[in-house]
Length: 258
Image (cartoon, rainbow, N blue to C red; front, side, top):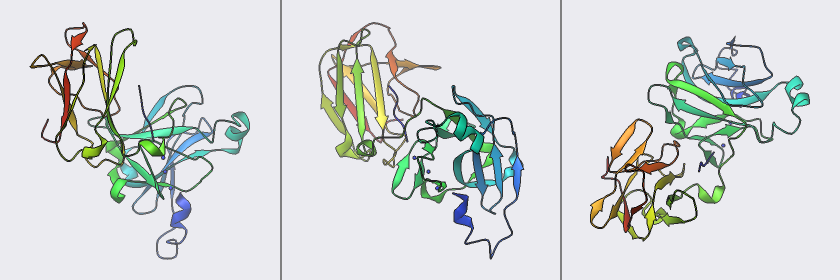
């Protein structure tokens, strides 16, 4: 299960144009009509292109693009004609290149893990108006991405499921806001666990621990093996290390877990 996010425009810099040089444009690629504009702190715009209407594509700007502060998706007139129903829902996500950590974006009252146009051409900013160097930034656009349900922005949930997906339990830790320990009892035998931490939660590094019959249950995800706690990071579900359904009696989410 995956969960998603929203963004702001270069028009914002029009008002600053009187005090700053006119934006300059550096085109990294020019082969498709779906592009992402990265605006640095000096107002210069780098355009990443080559994104696909049918599959996921990842691009990274060159280091000389500088400290990136604003970002937005742009469809050319030709792309709008070719994909008339895609532009309102098409979305992209930003991650930190060194560790693949996802980056939260904001536009007005919207906050999300991904960004799009959605009928609003304004640019998106990074959370807390952070500037991120282009060399540390990768952008993935994927037509399967979707904006987050506003009702889930501040959610913290753990879903437990069995291998056949016939049994699924959702535990709601939202009341803790990721700031203090919270334990929720449960019951059953499970193979997968997935943590979702909404973009409105400050502690994106929050981790949770499952216990069954007094023993910590260990999980695998990708190269992370035999871990006693699980995290989110937008990287999907974890699988019990043994690969077989395992009893889980309670789950604790705590800012102390690492």
